[in-house]
Length: 203
Image 1 (cartoon, rainbow, N blue to C red):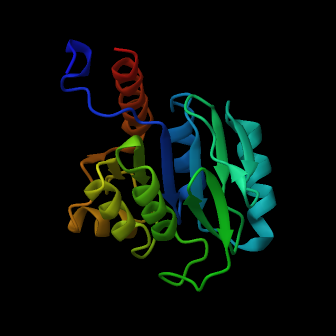
Image 2 (cartoon, rainbow, N blue to C red):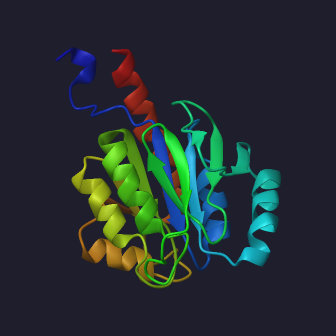
């Protein structure tokens, strides 16, 4: 093991984020400070509002924002793109592709954060970062645990800055979150994780 590899951990090449109630504003706060890495994003929102959400994110974020198309390639490391799951379709990482699925709801949700996080855990493991933000219910908690068990870095939003603490609280209860952070701290933490990983990969 080289000097540059010690205590730096694996190269983190993708960020997966899930949010629900209060999510749009929280996601913008995080992604305005996020590193140049591909982001897979699920926000629980009704079909009628999905296109408007993507258009709004594209206007306020520095990254390219687009809705996922079934079968598109997984973006390469260092690509500053935010790829949003369409309403009423699960988003799954499968090999080197992003797939959309009409499988049944999980936690009364489609898209389900758990479904995305579990596929990221399986296919990317320690190369990913999982982030669970404000939201009602428990979607994403078990998936974040799977990501942590697979070696991914995991973050949950704290209670004081969550509009609704349901999802992050469930993740914390399961010990799925390595770090519990206030909302303004999450973007810089993601940058730190990806930057350290890039240093490690170059060492």
